[in-house]
Image (cartoon, rainbow over all chains, first blue to last red; front, top):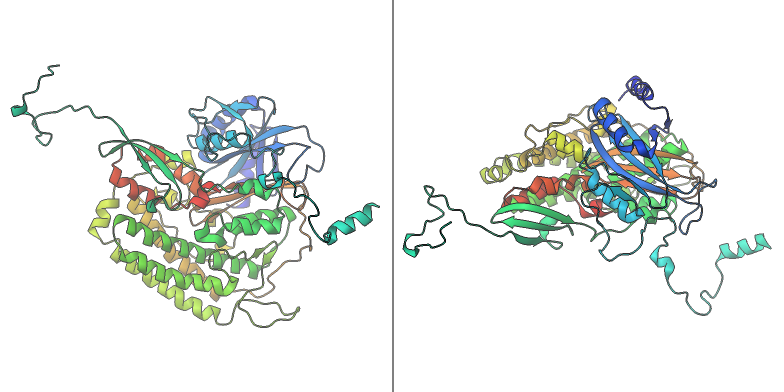
Length: 185
Length: 398
C-alpha cells in the first residue's frame, strides 16, 4: 500500500465520518453507539471494507486492581473496537464506540459479519457486555459455572488473591522496598 | 402410512429402484479434546445423521491462559516472552507484530541489519511451521512417511534458528529497537557487539537448497498420490465471501483465490526488496490449501537466499532508553504469520506495561468457520478439512 492510496482512502472516509483519528499509522473512526450497526453496513457496502478482522473491548476505569490506572482520570466506560479491512489494497480501520458500564449493551454485528459471533461471545464473557440480537450469547472460553468477568480492571488475578502467608515472609526486605521506605520518610 | 411390513418382502436400502424412508435419529459424537487430529485440545461436539454431519459445535478454552489479562501486569520486555508461546510452531513470527506495534508508539527507527535478521528468522519460522503442516496433514490423510521426512527437514531449519537465537521454539530474540546479540557468536567486548554465528550464511545456503529439494519431493510424493487427491480435491470448499465474513486469513484465504498477503501490503519488514511470488488457489478446497502452503515454503526459501546475499551491515539495536516506557497512544500492527493475520493492538497510558493489549490471532478466526463449513459434510472428511485449516490451539485460545 503506498502513501497516496491511503491518503485518498482517508479523504473519502472523512467525507462521511467527522471523528477520525490517524495516529501511529492506525486509523480510528469514533462513532456513537446508536450508529454502531449502521456504520458497519456503510463501511462494508460503500467503502469496500468487507473483511472482518476482530472485535474487542477496553475497560476504561480509574480504580484498577491490576496494572496501572490511566494517566489522566477518565470517565469510566467501555470502549468497543471493531477492526475492518479490505482484501485488495489492505486499507484498515478501527471503529470505536463508547458505552455505559451500567447494564452495558450494544447491537450485535452477526447479521452483517458472521465472524463477529465468536468475538462477541468472548467480549461477553470477559467484560460482561450484552450483545443484543446475538444468536448464541454463551461463554466461549470459560467454564459454564464461572462467575465474574476476568478482563474487567476490577477483577484481580487469581494468584494475587491467595491467602497471605502468616508471620515474616522474607528474612530480609527486598532492596527496592528499602529504597522506597527511605524516600518516603 | 401402512405400518405392517412383510418380513419376506423387505426392500433393501441398496436397491435403488425403491425409495426407502427410514427415520434416523441424530447421534451426538464427541471428538476431542484429546484427539490427534485436533492439533491440541480442541473439542468438537458433532451431531451426525449416519455419516453426514448435521451440526458441529466447537468447544474452546482448554488451553486458555489469559494472555490479554497477564499482559496488563507485565512490562513490555516481559511480554515478548509471552507472545512467543501463542503459536508455538512458529514462535519467532509472533514476536514481530508486538515489537513493531511498540516501536511504532515509541517512534523508534530499527537498524536495517536488525530488520533483515528479523525477516530471515520469520521466513525460517514459516518454513518450519509449514513443514509441520505438510507432515501432519499427510499423516491425517493416511500417509506415514511424509511425517518423518518433514520432521527431518524441519530439524535442519530449527537448528539454524537455534544457532542464532539459542532456542528452537521460543527464541525470545527480539528486543524493542532491534534484536538481541546472537547466541552462537564469538567472544565480545562492549564495542564489538555479537552478531550472526560464524558459518551462518554457508549453512543457510545448504539448508535452503535442501528445503527446495524437499518441496519438490513433497509435490511428487504427496501431491501426486491418487489417494491424497481423492481425499482432498473438491472437499471442504471455502468461498472468498465466507473467508472475508469470518476474518479467515493467510494460506486459507489465498487458497480461495484472494491474492492478499500482508508481506506485500504492509511494511512491517522490508519484503519489498525481494522478489517472490504469492501463490493462490483456484477452488479453495483442501488440496489448494495444502498446495499453497507447499509453494510458500519454496518462496520463503527464495526470500532467505536473497536476504543473506544482500545483508546490510550496521548495528543490531537502535538507541533505546534502559527502562522501556511507552508514550500514551494506541497502535495496531498486523503481520503475515505462517497461519495468517496476526495483530497486536497496544493501548499505552505511558506506563511500564500496556493498559490493554488485544491479541488478534489467525487460528481463532480461521476455525470460527468450522460450524458453517462442516455442516452437511461427511464424517470422514472432517479430519481432512480440519487438518487443512492448520490451526494451533495456543493460537486459538491464547
